Length: 98
Image (cartoon, rainbow, N blue to C red; front, side, top):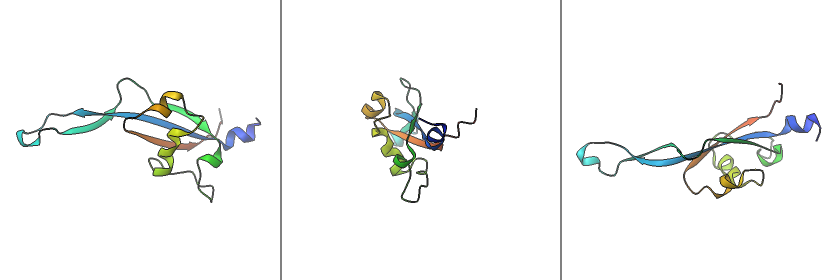
């Protein structure tokens, strides 16, 4: 893989979440909110640009339906593919300028 190919990768950051009970007033029983998952940290993995962009090569917006579908990408870790709880996905161009 050339450096140009690496620059064309899109970095996908998968953020697993969980529902937790929150304190509320008496009339708000069963109130829940999303928080970061305790048992898993966010993970970042690269995918080819063509897998994370629209027909005009624009990177999928963060937390969009299209970005969230990258959970099932073959480059994602197995636990990401298997995650059945709530989550969101952020995307960024891999500039690799280090």
